[in-house]
Length: 103
Image (cartoon, rainbow, N blue to C red; front, top):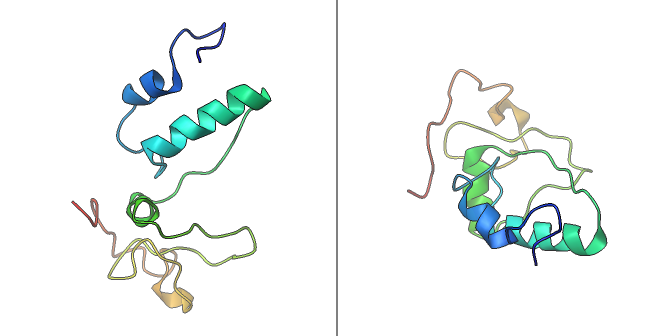
């Protein structure tokens, strides 16, 4: 349902956006907007690597706030949080993954 400030539905707003906004899937944005409108609240979050967004779309969970390791943006572990942080984006920053894993 459109709010009094914006006469567009959440679905209409999402259609105007790029496919992924910080790794967030469009169907998630619609549900977040609906919840935010119902609860009259603002929802904030941090974006994820584009390759992590592909894993989230495939059903993999996101990391909790209790996990302090950095994700990887390179190699076969791109989009995951490697147990050995030498494979993370911090240590392997010279090996960047370009584009999406599932295209």
